[in-house]
Image (cartoon, rainbow, N blue to C red; front, side, top):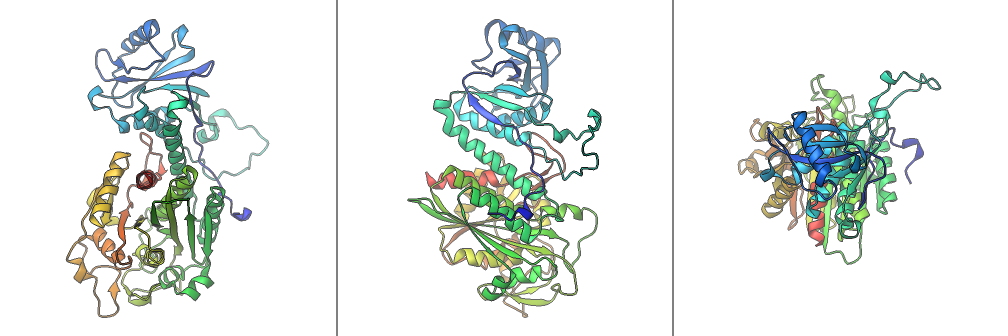
Length: 511
């Protein structure tokens, strides 16, 4: 059980979503899709709006000059026979370009736009194969993190205009479909999307409340509730077992590091997987101090650990038939009289020595220990994810993460990421870094002497710690893990990338 002292200080609100053949009585709105046409948008086919009511809606859309452009929202009074207070039409763009991502973004926009309503029926697609995308969009798009609020006005009703919009309970959505036929698709989408929101919750917690000890307790509570086995190593156990990388990064903070391990062991598992995620609960850069501007965003530097933990919890809830051991190193990277210095040499778990030339390249240092430990379990695959390098954004922008590692696994994970709407691109490790990583002071160095290919150099560094014969992949999510504004189904601040990519891959392995 999690320590009650360390309960999550706030949870993001998400819309409850259910699957039903019938719309709820007296629903506030019925949501439909419309395809782009600047003169007369076409209503997307659905079984819940046809005949005379459909003609009335079509005329209303023309009257208000709706176009059907992607994510355009149009509200109309509902015809009498519809059984809802309003019809909300969301644009789907060109009919010939409709895919899961279009529907996912449209549903996310709907969810975020209808927070003033209570009960909403959704008829965006009759296609069973598209239902999961609609469910994901509704849950993820409406996510709102309320922040940590004080109670100075406790007992006094605040004026409506001064209330935090996130304080209102979100709308309840009923997705129209066939529960007997579609329950499996619905359940996978629901659990996956809710797990994305859990990862967002972890990341959004400020570092005043999220440090290695408290974060380990947060993880334990949610993991044990999902039926996972949990192991937490404190600083004394880390020292005893030789986790030199985690200890080196954490030694500059008064808040000591932790290593958390989760175990999902279903019967008759077909494959054995190791997941690893970076858990730097705050990153100042250490002695190699970051600039002050934007440093507050470094509460998100544990986004990789949040993603692999949430994906493992999803696997347990869905009973995915893959054995999973998840290893997350947790540390706070701070400057102090006890912090590691540029030029220091440390010994990692497993014995490799590393020359630390930049203490702001700390993620790879803690991950190295975790990868060696995960490799000892002899998994078939090892997948690690981290908010690792600014070079990822230079190479691929803020919305596309880089995937490196074993060729076949790297390419498949990148393909799955694009398939679920988490943009990913396979990147080759560079031959020149095999020489650049060498140093006369130790076995390897933690940064290159030049600035070129920094994302791939980090991948090369991590490759030194992967056990022999293990297929592996490294996902650098530095940009996509955090969003400055909301769009589609992507929330502002923590995004939860790449939870759905990992869940899709685990499901594929099990089938």
